[in-house]
Image (cartoon, rainbow, N blue to C red; front, side, top):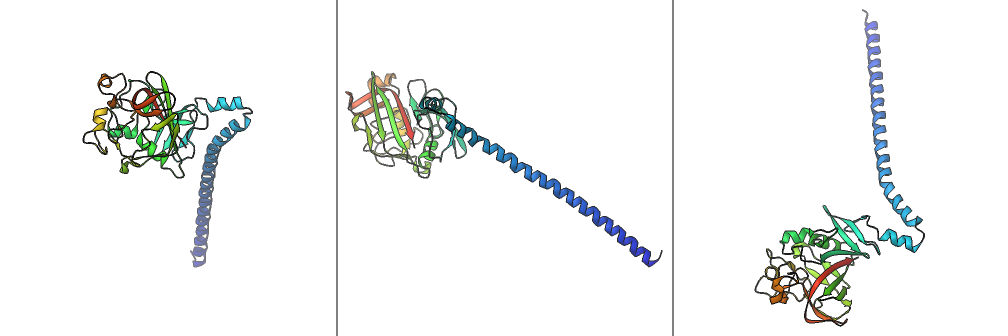
Amino acid sequence: MSETTMTTSSTVVDTLLTTTAIIALETTTTAGSVDTTEAPTTMETTFSTVPTTQSMDATTTGNTEQLTTVATSTVSPVYGCLNTTLCPANFSGTMEIACDNFTKSAQCEDGWLIFLKRTSEDLNFNRTWADYKTGFGNSTAGDYWLGLEVLSQITNSQNSNATLKVDMVALPSSAIYIQYSLFRVAEEEANYGLYLGGYSGNVTQDSFANITQGLAFSTFDRDNAANTGSSCALSNGGGWWYENCAKAQFTAHYSRDSICRSDVHRCIRYEGTAAAGVNCGLTCMLSSALMKLRL
């Protein structure tokens, strides 16, 4: 074979190889572009359907009666711990709170998030630090404690302006309520310290009004109580923000407990002067207590 013939054959082979490589590359590129364009389209559709459904509910509801029906339904809306709204205005029902690394179910009442519900002796509130941190009880139907960590995340979120409301029933059947203009629970490193603002309600003197700001939370297995020589949590049977064993506590022994007949100060109680014909200046035992927050 001549040198010219060999050169021509080599050129043809090179050309065929190059053409094959180009075709293969174009095929790969085309397939890749199809995959990358389909995925974002699917994600965009998935995320855009949620706001569309919500906006239809808001815009197609044409009167106050319908709005109230939507607001008080038991459908569970999902909100983040760092959002500016938890329970929508006038909403009563169950919901989920999406926080940092966990979600919590809770009850809403007229737009307030209930974080402590105590209405009977059925649920044991004499719990460990770990239990009070994460929460316990039936937070969708029964009595419960929502958890210190979720309270801390909610009330320490950016631009949070949480307020606290406490609803109590003093034995035998007197309703007492108090609302605080500020409510904040510090981080665990600060022992979930409590901060409260000024109060209003059907009371003229409130036992929470003069607490030390930043008062630490205590349980029987982690005693951070101030100004006491013994464990208030161990004696009273529940975790709380103790100062001199507290003048108001909603996690102590329940009022039907035999202990309460001998020492009312170790029981679920409130100490203050109520303006609605109930004088709890010495102390009032309670049949129920709700602690609620709103942003």
